[in-house]
Image 1 (cartoon, rainbow, N blue to C red):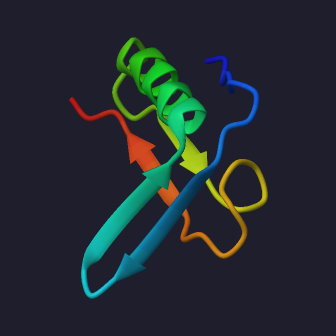
Image 2: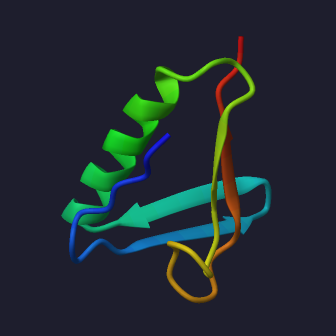
Length: 69
């Protein structure tokens, strides 16, 4: 699966008290929408792993999105 980013994307994930908040600018939201659409076409168990080393803003919590059955 190809992961595509729109130039200028910014995404931050925070987790606190059993709540997870995803904050993103326009480019970030569009990038996530494309990636989730691509994930939906993959077999069950496929996943996308987001962290501050590959896509999220510094200090973000890790986020893993998995396609279920």
